[in-house]
View (cartoon, rainbow, N blue to C red):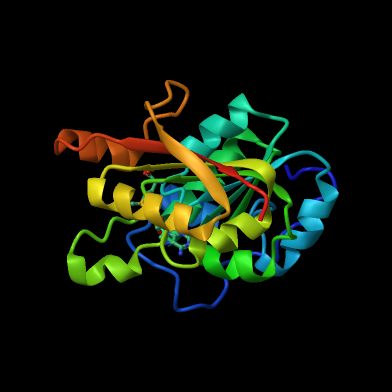
Length: 225
Ligand SMILES: C[S@@+](CC[C@H](N)C(=O)[O-])C[C@H]1O[C@@H](n2cnc3c(N)ncnc32)[C@H](O)[C@@H]1O
């Protein structure tokens, strides 16, 4: 079931080399093959956001989608725009929202940088969640990290003044460098916070805890330019 007014997808994944394929379970494969009303082509995002009059949260890199499902159930008045480019994860979230009939989730298979650049109207989002972005722990790979450079500014353009960005990572040097990038943007004010009880444990986080890594949460508010 799709939300009233949200255009249905064109079905299937867009033909881009950016998508990370990987082993797909039968359940994920069925969800990916179905012409799911929850999977939206990026060009249809502006119309979907127009059709939804309430607040919208962007979830960047949802992985298996379990956390998106939890938030969607807990916050039915918020639409979650869930963006990832990992094919099995897309299938997983499509299966979850399809089975649960969650009308407040839109799944987009894309690089979030492309979505921010072209598909989200200025200041349309009330908030953003990025839980455990790929850590790229080796120093020579740090430039591949998502939250760096101009990325905080790109996200700020899409978020209303006063809106939030909740970030969690379990790599201390990533936490330090993203703090620096957020402050350097001049568009965000924030601080480290204790891990909120209300934030569901993510799959990546559980693996990190088993390896002895603790989550570092930070909460940012979009300040006026
Ligand atoms: C380490 S996983 C964490 C997944 C999940 N949030 C969790 O905590 O279990 C990072 C996720 O971000 C996604 N990702 C990485 N870069 C991305 C990008 N530029 N746009 C959208 N998703 C991205 C990856 O495909 C992956 O699913």
